[in-house]
Image (cartoon, rainbow, N blue to C red; front, side):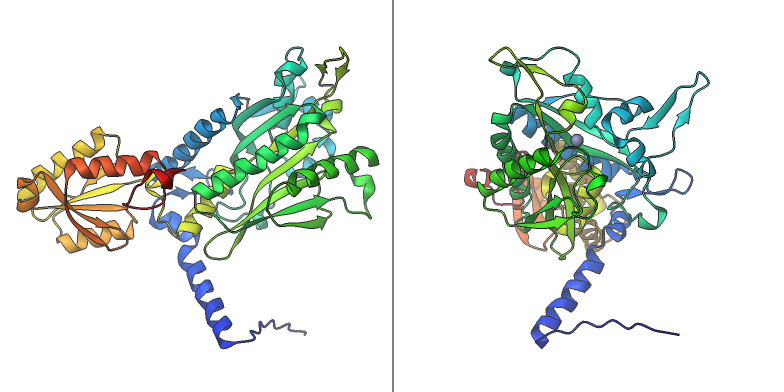
Length: 442
Ligand SMILES: [Zn+2]
């Protein structure tokens, strides 16, 4: 019998120590472990493997992210649409996903009348049909259609992994329909949107990976040589206008064109492919999409595919590991816990908590019959950003003693100041826990 033993060697003890510390951090930040401890999500064999059940706390993160994406993308010129979860098989023959992509799709539902429906594995064809729902002029391009689209893919059972590889997911998706002259500029804007999102979340470690054709298997791909070369040229031109490192990978293109993935690295060193971007010169023709150009001629629009925040599932998996569960205030499921030092101050504690809730702050009162230190420890384990301790002195001063989850004690602050500060930090979506300045929000 042959036994293979793998080993890793480090040039210095220092590097070995760093590596071991990183492994330890990865274990502590594991999104499946924290997902359980912080009650964010679960899966059930009765529902099916790879299908996520979002618990109330995890769902807050999901909805906050979605709200952020909607606000941001509306400001960046996107319009929102909604498309169904199931679709007749013919659409996937038009898109070319059938038969090539069939193994990655759930088997079809066969109807009595002979119709055959699939769970949608992606949103692209649906958005193309919305584009095609009426005639279009060059004047309305670029047209940017966005949706948190819910998709299902039949990933192999052995590949499923927590939130990172699932069978059902909601994607921060959009398709941009534009003229060839607009494509590079639009693609640059898409890349800048990624950078805006990542910067806001304190993600600084990322790079691009360009997926090209496998030169040995050219029959696997649709479209002609000219189309592939042009799409590649346009994407390279867009990337050259930005300061982001890019590597190339042969064989990982989509079947209808090259693609560029954003790879982000979490604080534990784990890499996540979050978003796939494409300048697609193929599907416009395949779906017979048209626009009337300035010269009066009918032309096919260029289609840009993008999903900066990936899917809720994978992106929240990333955020859990990146922050180790210590989410920025705006994403924290519980933002403040009010802790009375004894039962005598429970009524005042309730008043403080209710005042915070009336301002839209997610606050809870911990009036359990436990020692104050135990309550602080529990709130810290739940990674709650603010612990507001109240006793006689605080009640008299209409105040609370503020403790941050980092362990920092800020002393007594008036309830008004606490509410205003938390609200400002929340609405400006900064990472800092207490200090707030206008500069930090830009
Ligand atoms: Zn797409």
